Image 1: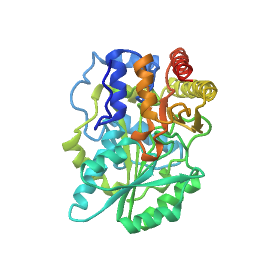
Image 2: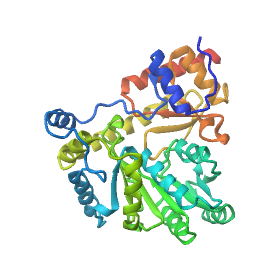
Image 3: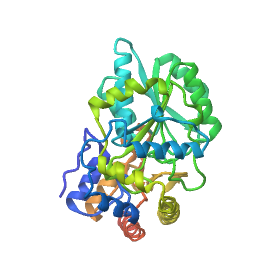
Image 4: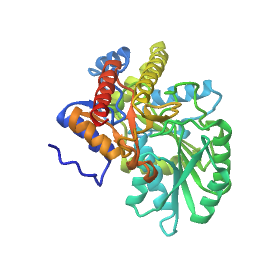
Length: 380
């Protein structure tokens, strides 16, 4: 019998570790259940015998940066190497920008804001350094602009974390709302950290990411992890205004130094191939099928879900038989070894919610859904 106690650290890691330690189905952590593209794996295998095993340039593999510049040029954005920094995942980007703020405003009282429900790092990292975090509700799938403006002014908010698609709730904000947020924050001298790790992982249409509004008050993080199923490679990047190039690169020298050389080289060679586009298209189709499956089967059992537009996760309210995400998650794992994350971890308002990763193999999802149904049958 496992002694379940609400952890002081990450609940995502807690439930994911349970699945890894005791076996079972891991729908807790954002780990894709798909293999990376075959050609990408073959390239990585081939370069293992080449001279790619020492430190790469701190700012990133030159060929990989060039591939990103070409990608954004095709979309109409004229970036240079001074706008792009290759990092150890988007998580390092969050830390870099936050630590930069700790330096800039070390003698000032300032705070952080984000949307509710937020991704764990947007809240937990600032709290560990004594910074208050204010949560803004999403109303009708939008951020209330007046509420945002008042929050910034009243609480001296200097950093606003924003994700679209979001996590744990995969909502996509419309273009006008995002543009207005960026413009208001620039005017109020509040920096926006826009988390775009799921920009290529959408269920309907591509989300708007404000690359066209890049300015000294806007930072955009993206990643290769989710769209190519390589979360363990830890390769992400930060797009920023060129005025911060020296300072953010220098800080990266002492925090991350560089991302993996072999992984960067493999991605640099892979990105220009047609296989890259084909895999992205295949992944979107798989996620759409999985999303429909989970919603269909769990709504039969009394779940209700907020509509997901992109990303890996379903954000759902548990049936009334439980009405408590922690109780549901612990009983589900205890009896059937299926792991997911209680919504209470993300927001105090979400005690009756859970987050479910549906980026898993179809057969695994079917088994997990069957076991969830069994649990609910035992309770009813």
